[in-house]
Structure formats: C-alpha cells, structure tokens
Amino acid sequence: ANGDRVNRPRVKSAVNEGLIERGEYDHFMLKEIHEQPESLARSILPYIDQATQTLNLGDVADTMFAKADRAVAIACGTAYYAAHTAKYWFEQKAKLAFETDIASEFRYREPVLPQTGPAMFVSQSGETADTLAALRYCRQNGTPAVAVVNVPESSIAREAAAIVPTYAGPEIGVASTKAFTAQLSVLAVLALNAAKARGHLLPGDEVMAVKSLMALPRKVTEALEAQDDIREIAKTLAPCRDVLFLGRGRYYPLALEGALKLKEVSYIHAEGYAAGELKHGPIALIEKDLPVVVIAPKDELFEKTISNVEEIRARGARVILISDAAGIKAA
Ligand code: M6R
Image (cartoon, rainbow, N blue to C red):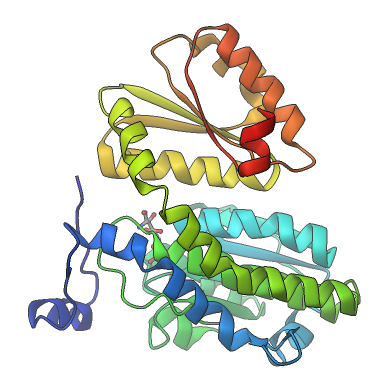
C-alpha cells in the first residue's frame, strides 16, 4: 500500500492543481523519502551559523531550558517516536530529565507538570487533535509550550509560547518519512542548544556537533544509494506474517518506528522491542519464519545487541541488521 495523505485543504488544492507533483516517482511516499537530503538541509541550516560552526537557535533554549527542572514531550505516532529518541539526547547531552508521553493518554492521567521547564509538542501537521488538547491542558496549568511543527500557521504552532519549525515541506504520503527525519534533526538541534544553555556543551564539542549535523544530508544521500539492495531485502519480507524490530538505547524508539512503518505501508504485523527485553518474553516467538530487523550501529551498545543477534540466529531466525560500515564488518 502507498496511501497518499492530503490532510490540509491548502495542500490538497496544491496537489489537485498540479503544483505538487510525483515527478518520476511511483508515489508521493517514495518521492518524499528521496527528498530527505534536501529537507534535512532545510531543517538544519536555519539553526546553525555555518561561518563559525556554532549553534544559532535564538533565545528559545535560554528561556525554556536553561533553568528547567525537567521537560516533557508529547506527540502521536511517528512524531512520538521522534520525541522518544530526543529523550536520550536531552538526558545525555543537556542533563535534563525528559519524559515523553503519548498525546492520547497524557491529559487523562492528571500528569504532574514540570515546575520550571517546558512541555514540547511534536507534530508534522500541527493539527493532531490529541496533541492540541494536551497543549491546551499544559497551557491551562501554566506550563509553557514549545512546538516543533512542520506547518507554522497550524493550531499547535499558533497556540504555543515558542515554535521551532521543521522545514520538511508538504508531506503528502500518509506514512511520515521526511517529516520524521526533519523532526529528529530539529530535536537534535534543540537538545544541543539546551546542553549549551545549561553549561554542558564545551565549545569544541559544539563545533563537532555542528559538523555532524551538517554532514547529515550527505549521509542520507549515501544511505539512499543502497535502495536497490534494500528493495531486494524488502521482497523477502513481503510474504511474512510477522516481523520483529529490535533496537537498544536511542535505537529503541527507531525500532518502534520501523515496526509502525512496516505495519502501516505493508499490512504486515510488526512489533518493536528494546533489544534487552527479548529474553523477557518475545524470545518465545523466535523461529525461522520470523525475520528480525536489528538496528545496531557500531557504538558503545553494539556488542550487547550483537549478543541478542546470536541468540536469534541460534533459534534459526533470519536477522536483517541495519548498521554502519564498522558494524556490518564486526557483526
Ligand atoms: O501530524 P502529526 O505529526 O501530529 O501526526 C501524528 C501521527 O498521526 C503521525 O505521525 C502518524 O503516526 C504517521 N503519519 C505514521 O507514519
């Protein structure tokens, strides 16, 4: 399936009037996947000073994060997984307690809000009803809202105290692709700015981080060059009934997002798990007809995740490892 989403009248008319076209691509989702180098560059460049290779977000980080006791981030679906990934960055880089919540649950819990920190709302459309309701709940309780949205004139953007836009451009495909990576890049910028405002980012580390951000569009271009190989692997998943996705640390939310995306576009049942949770139940399902997608770049957690890979292989299941060159070599 490749359902194309038209979730706003303005975008709809732009599509109908031929202002947004699929071009050479079979469907909008594929087009939007290939737009990522450009949408990432658009989402990163406004927030950095290229000449000095420093962060340049303005005063949002100082006013919202410098003295924060903690922060919460609230969103739905893919946007929630972007926020969940950012939790690792805010905690590790900015030393800020950071909770994430699904918007459709948040306001029913009577959550205890931060005393001096913001609530962040991540949304492509800026119109998701539960996310907007959660924002209103926070405002009523005096918690300032920071919106990370792709549509600057949306309700969530209008009602927030501060907006840090993503610049993914219109996303027509139902499945979020370029909006997700734009959210991740802007949340990374925010986490780094929060780290700086809180005195946890040394000048040398800031330059290194900015260089890494600037390298992202090129790295995504390189990743997209593997599309023919990826298509062949995808064909082997097509007949499967279930697929498991595993990740550890900041790749755990990515495993959840991978499972969501597979369900949404292929109607194959998929589950995402934290790799360390495998032994607490799901290992019972591992057998030769259950492919397991493992997201494990070569980092400090790699060896631990590879030990899970070995357990999975020992039970006869096929592992599809998503890693970097060093990880593929070491696996
Ligand atoms: O517009 P939003 O980002 O607020 O939408 C939230 C979710 O509905 C959305 O992320 C959804 O999960 C994705 N389109 C799935 O690919």
